[in-house]
Structures are given as C-alpha cells and as structure tokens.
Length: 107
Image (cartoon, rainbow, N blue to C red; front, side, top):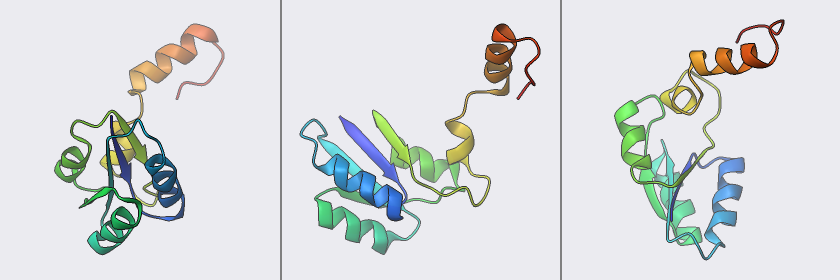
C-alpha cells in the first residue's frame, strides 16, 4: 500500500510517524514545499520524501500518483488544489443535502 503525507507540520509529522509503524504500508512518502524538511522527516522515519507545492496541480499530482491513501496536512492558508481536489463537487453536496432535508441550506 502506498501512503502519501502532504505537509510536514506538527499534525502531518505525527500522522507520518504513526503510519511508519504500520506493517501494511509498503511505500510511505512525506512531501512538503520545503525539501529539507521533507527529507529530514522521511529519513527520521524511514520513508521516502519529496518536494511539492500545494498551489501547483502538477506537483500535487506527481506526489499522489499511485497512492492508495493521501493525508492532507497542508494548512488552509490559501486556496490550493489540495483542498478542492478532495472535496465533493458542489452538485454532489447539494444533491445529498436536498435529498435528506428540503429545508436545509444548500452548500
């Protein structure tokens, strides 16, 4: 199983350290905009590391290619493909809310 951890901040680092302890994860990669930070964490936990920029869709696609699980630890500091690519489309969200409760506000 391939797991990609996006970001190397405090939460993502803890998730990466926990993931590294699981036997079922054969390919773990940590990625961050700061390559030195990604390398340091990757080497510390025995994982691969990569540089990626959350604002660059091609960079994001390269890091998550073939991943079975992606953990997005990138902060909500700016609009990025990381945030929009993992969310259901507007149509999916409005369909699910309108089907259950016609008085609920549409998202």
